[in-house]
Length: 154
Image 1 (spheres, rainbow, N blue to C red):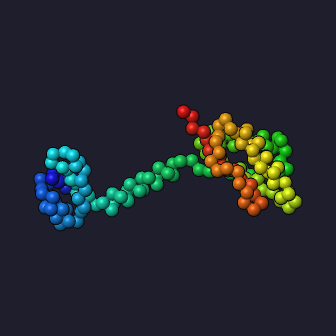
Image 2: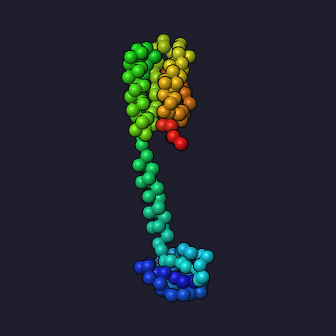
Image 3: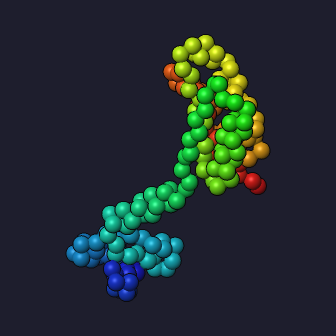
């Protein structure tokens, strides 16, 4: 087994047990890099540090994705105001954000749950060209919500 030390230089060719003890003596882990080569190549690494750095890189990639924008409406919203909210949602979706639309019912409006779902369906239909449903319309107490994400064009 060809062993590469922590500085990236070839330390020599060792038997498996010798390579493991060589790595332990120096305080590193022995990681097999190219098992199919002749002889197999192993590298001295701090495996915990390598794992930590990979997790950090994954977290950084996740942070680069766009977040969530929220749009609030009520059951009594006028047509013009609804059009403005829809155009704002379109802008967010075009920029790559996910959009959650929240419709809150107050007092006696709770009797008209069907109208709330109809209004959300109307908004979904208006945004169908550029968005797809990520979370179906649902009710949580007096609030109705739907979450949309930008369509990925193929």
